[in-house]
Amino acid sequence: MTTGSEHSGPLGDRPFIGRESELAAMRDALDLACAGQGRVVMLAGPPGIGKTRTAQQLAEHAVAHGMLVLWGRCPEEAGAPPYWPWLQAVRHYVAAHDDATVRITLGAAASHFAAMDPQLVPPLTPLAPLAPPADAAQARFQLFDAIAGFWQRAAARQPLLLVLDDLHCADTPSLRLLEFVASTLSTSRVLLLGTFRDAEVTRTHPLSDTLGMLARQAGTQRLKLGGFSQDETAQFLGAIGKEPSPGLAAAM
Image 1: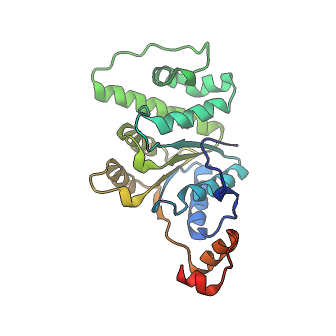
Image 2: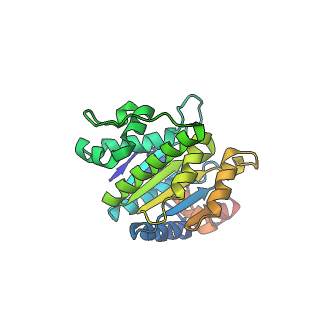
Image 3: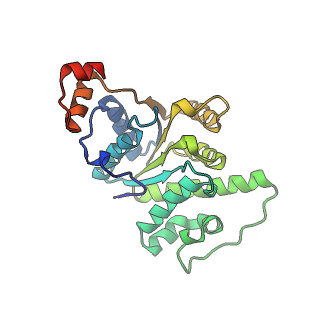
């Protein structure tokens, strides 16, 4: 089952071209995740290079192998609440399961999710009162630990592919949560795939610190999408109805 904000449209109807080595690496990561060795893959590239379409190809492969695919997208426009890509992914999980399953999977995290987004919690779910934390750092840790526990319980029922799209637009709380969740995945059946525009990530960009932290963790890969080869360009020209001549493909 695939749920979430997969992109569709004219490009989505065209044959998928290239990216064989990148997809092979991500499929290997999926296999390890399904075997209980959680993985994180960060897929980088310039705008329009095909990051989301490549993620969709991986999602199709994941569904065919019995994984649940959940998407969260970081919006470019301002105004989204904190943790928005994560909330989207949890909403999609809730929508894909009956209330009884959601209650069990939420577990002790139900009170935290209800505070963030009441629609995440089914009616009649027992909610333990949240004790006032000693400080903001403790409150954030409790929240992150509850969310990480939710994903671990969800993955125990069915292996997960979590796709966080356009992380260069992510709010800082979402990035801190990404760091925390990634650190808990070593024995979980989860592949966390993030996409981002690397040209936008300067040293002062919030995602830069997150990428540095992830790079120090075992089980993390960073892949970069470049332009098509000449043969792939010829295939692309044919797919959009152009004459795939070697001269035009080479020029492009």
